[in-house]
Length: 174
Image (cartoon, rainbow, N blue to C red; front, side, top):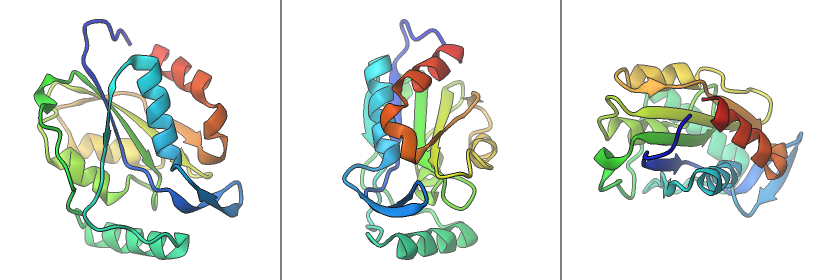
């Protein structure tokens, strides 16, 4: 992907605290998707935007995923704390998120439904612990039918700290 003369946004939803990593519960100071988003920003020079919800998810992993499952079943769109004030200026949006129940967290859909992505490129990066991209890329394309949704990339959360080179390679193949 040629990023010259392109304005890049890296929008991410991430959750620190108790997470399932490499087969065990671990406490993360920074969520895996935030780590990936920072790497993309370093590689591309793009601006970071945290997709933050007014409702704060519980720190306890099991409580969090049970709430996420209910949100998915109800197709709930959590209210976000901030908006991108100049979205029309961006050409490419890297979208980083964890795999929650086979797709993006509902907060990511809140973000996507907030803006007109017609003609913009969306590059999805999903962190996971074994489920890969699942339906997330297809679901993003459904919500943003006029966007150019490129080949998504999945990174196992437990390997995120050493993933900068493979993320750079993915970006170069787009």
